[in-house]
Amino acid sequence: MIRSAIVPVAGHGTRLLPATKSQPKEMLPVARKPIVQYVVEELVANGIEQILFVTGRNKSSIENHFDTDPELTRVLTEGNKKDLLAELDFEDLEAHFFYTRQRFQKGLGDAVRCGENFAGEQPVIVALGDSILGINAQSKAVSRMAQLFEEKRASCVVAVEEVPREDVRHYGIVDVVPGPDGTLRINRIVEKPSAEEAPSTLAVAGRYAFSPLIFDMINRLKPDKRGEIQLTDAIQMLCEEGKRVLALPLREDERRYDIGNFPSYFETFVEFALADPQYGDGFRKWLEKTIGKKAAKA
Ligand code: UTP
Image 1: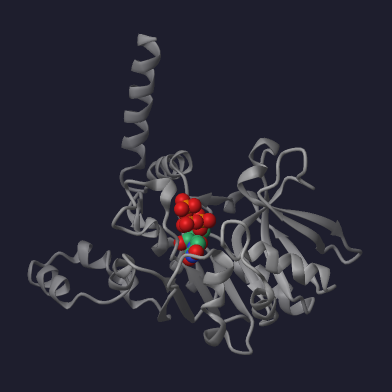
Image 2 (image 1 turned 180 degrees about the vertical axis):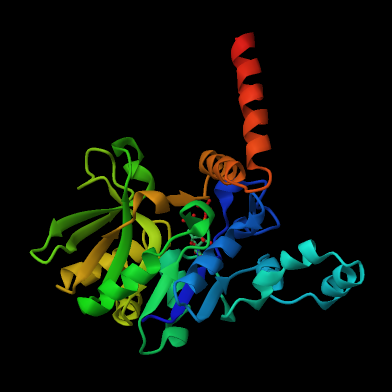
């Protein structure tokens, strides 16, 4: 099993300004929890024992969130607020946290490279800190990826999901060939292609399993036109070198919620709020009433 994960959280999050001016987008709440807490809980539920956050300036709240807060615990204990104390149970998650900084935001490939020494000679999961898999992060995709990685001796496994053709320009898109053993081998991967150029509608979905070879590829890459090192280009190099790069399709109930832009953030928040065990039903009634009133006025 793969036991280590790199979680890049150093991006500027400019598409969510002004919300992200002085706080990381990965700390924005979706219903009750910050986005990155869902990501960490998912990783731990998938057997990950050590997590490296690749952070940057203005990201110290992530570190604080996963640390204990003795003062807060004392206040809640003295006030006998047991239910609120239970909300801090995630502080005891069975994982070791490590932090490093990406000095300049030179792209996802460069952020992943910051984890080279952390990974060492071992395979590693990369999980984007702004993407949740499945409602309340109920996904076992990372375990399936790790299993596939080991069984097929792959160099890379990428989680993928179908997206509408008009949306391919927002994602890394893969060209796959089904193998006789039921695997999907990736031939080619293209970053944000146009609808006409896209080789398929299978989009990369924010989770990857890599052998340490990925760092050799990243280290050989030159920055692109925008001065960024793209992880997609490093994966494409693995394909070109004839390495085994496989796709793992997400199940319908573990779709990827990408929180990088406002429409998607709004949708994710509403879906998670509707699924809230305590407040979901009341929120649904309020939402239906509000939409009904708006429709009646129109
Ligand atoms: P995005 O591609 O959404 O980039 O990053 P971004 O810079 O955060 O956002 P915009 O485009 O300015 O709105 C996907 C994930 O990769 C991390 C981000 O923090 C996010 O979790 N990332 C991206 C880095 O860690 N470093 C980078 O240089 C770029």
